[in-house]
Image 1 (tube, rainbow, N blue to C red):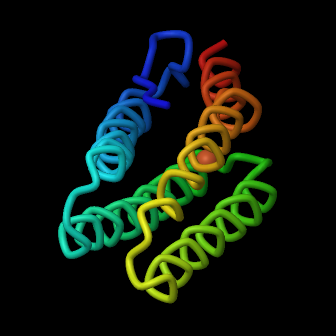
Image 2 (cartoon, rainbow, N blue to C red):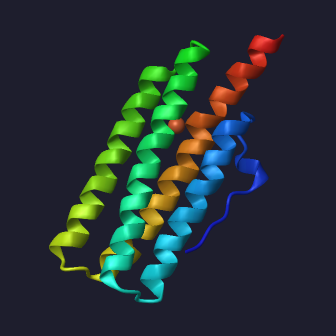
Length: 135
Ligand SMILES: [Fe+2]
């Protein structure tokens, strides 16, 4: 399953939206590489990149929420931490399987669904909050 960022996923905060766009691109690259049965080392590199990028993105998002004194920060931190764990598990499952592409392909839907759902239900509220500050 490949999915691109679409305007209906916009949070309304440019720097968050930009990172989400990159995140979708990188996730798609990883899953496409799995689908094409690319080399284990190549998939590992993409997986590591996605893992690092996710952590950096969450950190940036959390710093931003702190800056604007966003009241839902704690819930966001918990959601982020649990997804970071899921990714760590995916990485270790892939390593343990000896580079079985099925591990990556099975994770595809879980990873994309998580992000889409997280953006729709939690991140969009950050944008709503920012808008409410303007009033
Ligand atoms: Fe978030």
